[in-house]
Amino acid sequence: MVENSTWRSPGLPERALAVYTPSYRVTPLRSDGAAIPRILHGLGTRSIGSLISRGAAVAAEITAAAIFDVTCPPRSVEPAVEQGRAQPAGASLALFLHWSPDGRVSAMVRRQLALWREQGFTVIFISNSDVPAADRDAVGEHAALIIRRGNTGLDFGAWRDAYAIATQRFGVPSELLLANDSVLGPIRPMTPIIEAWRAAGQGVFGLTESVAPRPHLQSYLVLASGERAVESVARHLRGFRDSRSKWRIVQTGEIGLSARVIKDGIDCGAVFDYEAACRAIDPATRRELGPRFAMEGARRPWPLNPTFHLWRPLIERLGFPYLKRELLRSMPDVLGPSAAWRPLVGDRDAALILDHLRIMGVR
Image (cartoon, rainbow, N blue to C red; front, side, top):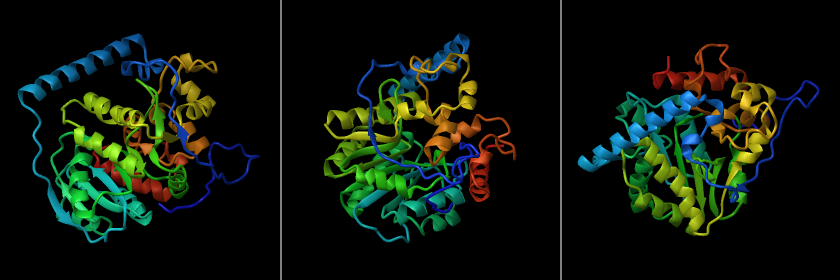
């Protein structure tokens, strides 16, 4: 995955320039509008029957998890910590979470680790699975620490535990990056995006903004910059409590993070804000979304997940650098040469993504 500043965009008409150079900047999270229940996220693309079915499944998941959390609280196994071969890079710290069914670490994930190290971060690799020795050795080229733990608390539980360990070793950072391997790529250059984050000054910045139940940063990649911002995120991590409910973890972890930062009076923004993603909707995406989105402006009552519902305009028109793993899981013939995502990435990137998907058990 080579860092290039421009690329040929499949979304550009033939008469347009052969290459596309996006302009990235951080946009503050929206502060207007009423709260939207999370259960309505994506309702516009569903039938009423599908919504009812989803609501019942979510309610059952929350209830069962709550019962087990009370009667048998999640217990974390003491993390195993190994020294990596990468030397600490300075005051920028990246906490990168990994998970795979058998613990293997794909070449794509190792490339992501290398990218963050190249950008000046001391990389802490955390896995919620049992990583084979050969893969730990490969990861050690890019990571200063390798931490293995049980899969409790998912990403926020892992970031919480790793932050405590890393700061004991390396001190409190001036930049803190939270990252996980739920995104595939990058398929676009990351350097201009990182520069946009850093140009925004002190604050907490992400890639995409979601609006349900209220505007917040999607937490697969978040940067806290500056002492106050790092401390706000650190307090949120320290206060996070493990749960067996993924729904609750998103509510208290991801959505709660932006709420905490905003309450602390810290700037909070995204490079790909929700309104910009909606304005970039193309005819093909409008058809995919269904009849409720046939007319311009019809999208407003129907909150969408930008990385799932708006993936095509994000990548083609705005220069978004990733594909979400769960998005590809939902596509038919995801591994085939005619899969919808294939024209948007180069052959080398596609090979790395396909290898990663196979490791994740996608067939």
